Image 1 (tube, rainbow, N blue to C red):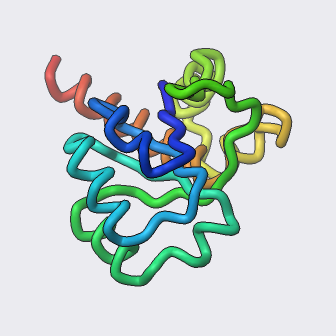
Image 2: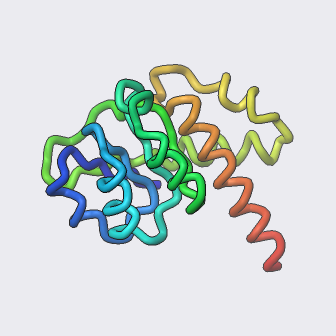
Length: 142
């Protein structure tokens, strides 16, 4: 799973098809609208804690209405290039999936990750939800 990292307004046009975006700058409501317009299938936006707490109420409300999850957290080891992405390793995804199959609850799954494996608690909660949803969809299709 990839998280598209945008560091400036100029990078919004590079978001085509992103489902998760990390915004490194302090976005306005209009920036959030532009990001959603550029990524109609957007599922989540992650903001650093310093920006998360200052996001406008109208932007937060808009995200809630359109079903986009707002996640507080940092991305470590960002590649310094114009089209940077952070990839959540398959190891982490498979570890979560295995723990879900084994019947572990969400809190137990989150606690099993160390701070050095990078995903924030909120990002882990989002991933657990997405994996459960995709598992339910896959089961329903069969």
